[in-house]
Image (cartoon, rainbow, N blue to C red; front, side, top):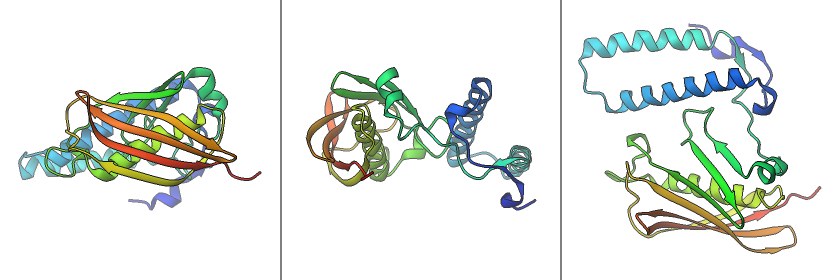
Length: 209
């Protein structure tokens, strides 16, 4: 098998610069890879089936990496006009390691709903705390960007109030708390059946021009 670097034929690309048909096909591929990752993590099949699956996966990997970009697709971070215009942002649709998240902004609140599976497990039957932090950072950052500002995370504090279960709808929300010059403080939280399981507070700073 060739080294991945030898197959890099293109520079990194922005999602907005690629045709929608290619993007949709790539989203479908990523969804298929996520199903494979879940199957690989939870399979109880025979050794013979595992070996056959490995051969198929290796063949698919060789096919997909015949031409590579220099990195993953670049998203829409740094383009607050897109958020303020559409009031919606998809995160993770083109990267199988990310939890797929669709965040909408309604007035002064950002919201999203998702259910996580065994790939996101930390304590038995519960969402991993590190992934909770990732989700909160996404919610906080998008909330800030929806105000028309481009900021970066300077501080992120979390309080874990209760276990966050797998396989059940989780409601995520974020609101801006206060601003001072280039600084923005934002609050976010995760709820399950109306009970808060995680709360977060972030400080975001607008870089100097």
